[in-house]
Amino acid sequence: MSTATGKKIVVTGATGNVGTSLVRLLAEDPDVAGVRGLARRIPDLGPDRVEWSEVDLTSEGADLVKEFDGADAVVHLAWAFQPTHDPVATWETNVLGSIRVFEAVAAAKVGTLVHASSVGAYSPGPKDHAVDESWPTHGWPDAAYTREKAYLERTLDAFEYEHPGTRVVRMRPAFLFKRESASEQRRIFAGRFLPGPLARPELLPFLPDVAGLRVQALHTDDAARAYQLAIHGDVRGAFNLAADPPLDAAVLGDLLGSRPVRLPRTAARSAIAAAWGLRLLPASPHLFDAVLRLPLMDCSRAHSELGWRPRQTATEVLEEFLQGLQEGAGAATAPLHGRKVG
Image (tube, rainbow, N blue to C red; front, side, top):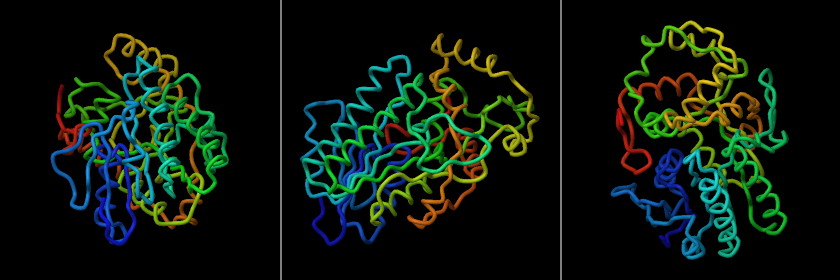
């Protein structure tokens, strides 16, 4: 890693949705001397001032202490959403892999650890008002994603107690979208064979309106700026990250020119469960259950202590993402490669 004056940053999951945005920001940051990106498959090209290491966090042979040696901060973004039919596999990557990262941070005596938590770590909460970072983080126990995010919150509680000299920041963003993530997120949540061009407003005259389906979104680049601010700041603890307005059937209906039609929860869940059971849909009905129960987040702490505010509204983010779906947008990394169908 570079020996020039400035911070030396290591980013795990550097080729994914958040990783690509953050690595680009840090590579342009005059206060950063060098960036090391860790990924299972390194890209052919990348920003200047970025070194790449091919690392699989599930491998006990991975020498993370060596990768972190000399770093001022480690930003842990690596995460696997699939296979949703095999929660043991995602547990090995997401939980056991994260624990290896945390242990290596301590062993390498890295001063700052910034961890990608999520709104999914929160216990069920209100949809009519926002909660701050003190809301319980026990997740929704039936969904692997929320269960894993919540478990790592408890792991970090113990880590902070055992390593008080390490500054730990937990980012809890809402759903993150950008144009370049469209193809990846289509594959993760909707399936490989959903044609992106079908995501056109004129093809959606009706929009399912399911009780409780009210969530927040954020542009990935805005989330990356919050990570950058946390790296350079002296803050600790958790930060909610989201843009206004919250997205529900009424907001989406106005955006798409579609008419919301009430759909019972049981009908929506049954359809998702059937498609998931037949392996036609990667997103599980358990994740759908969790989304219906996610609280809305109050981001006042990020505004006041980080000096962070999103530059794009949630509706602007969704418009950009839908355009990306139609075009099969992506980026030159293995997770984000673009493709319209299949």
